[in-house]
Length: 136
Image (cartoon, rainbow, N blue to C red; front, side, top):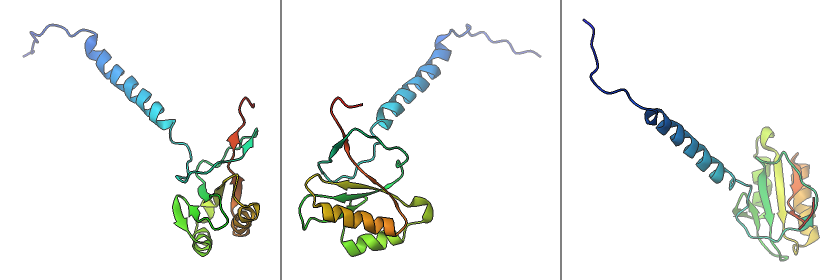
């Protein structure tokens, strides 16, 4: 016995609703995804440069604020120099990349000390900068 439907045939609106839902989700994803830029959480004034570096999207963040006795921050968490050394020593080999966010007013020797520490433990280092206005 064949069953016959007595409902009117559905229009194209039935098929457009899932398409619009998918497009809306993609738009929301890309709008929110653009804010997933590497940020340290500690406010520093970075030096300006025209160069750009890629490949450090999954890197750890070491922040050096201004002031000779300013605290260090590792991935947004305040640490001492000894705690930073311990945290860097305990990183897995595949995660040995770090971005140094050194404030423009931070002592140069302090920035180099932290950079040398990370380099001596096998890390790849990049120094964060701000792009120049009107630069390439």
